[in-house]
Image (cartoon, rainbow, N blue to C red; front, side, top):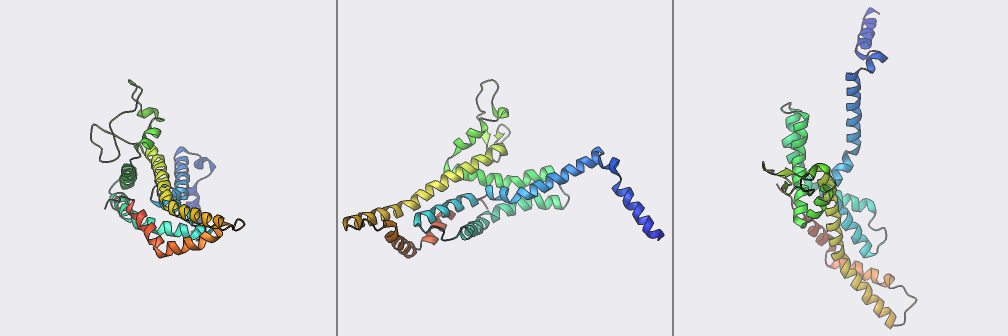
Length: 256
């Protein structure tokens, strides 16, 4: 009985009462926990938006529309393919993030601020490489122009010595809050361009089938109903899934 009382007393001393809960140090810990939970809940979305997932899933969605198969393959299948291809492409980047930032922090060698900077560096380099590869620098300049800290007070213009990574002493690093939305816009633009190339042959096939049906007087028969089997046959004969995935893989530049 005495032992139980001692345990309860020690627990009360550790937890404290309402007055202790509102102390600044306790509030700081509570806010840190809330912030951590928020970040953890948003982590999947943040990871997907900073990887190759967006481009891949948009292109596969446009491919499904071009084929005219309505909901086939299902959205779950398209999302799964996009996630597996994303894992293949992003694994070297994530390995570098782990080795440079997360592992040293877990071993107690660096602080959390330095760990965040080191972990983000490979992701930053990946996003910057895709923007450079597609020459979408204008997207970065768009978001930089809305950041007062990046405007030269003397000229009222953007600073002209920016660098995405490997920043030199006389250069300014592109802020992450400008790089992230710029990367998203760049990926959407690239995905739509790839989707146009995929769409074009199917549109031509639809036009040919529509011309044939009209010339034969089959006005009441929807051309899409006839062209769909030919689309599927053509897509299978040219090994379309492999070609599309191969094109997507080649469209990315991933450092190792």
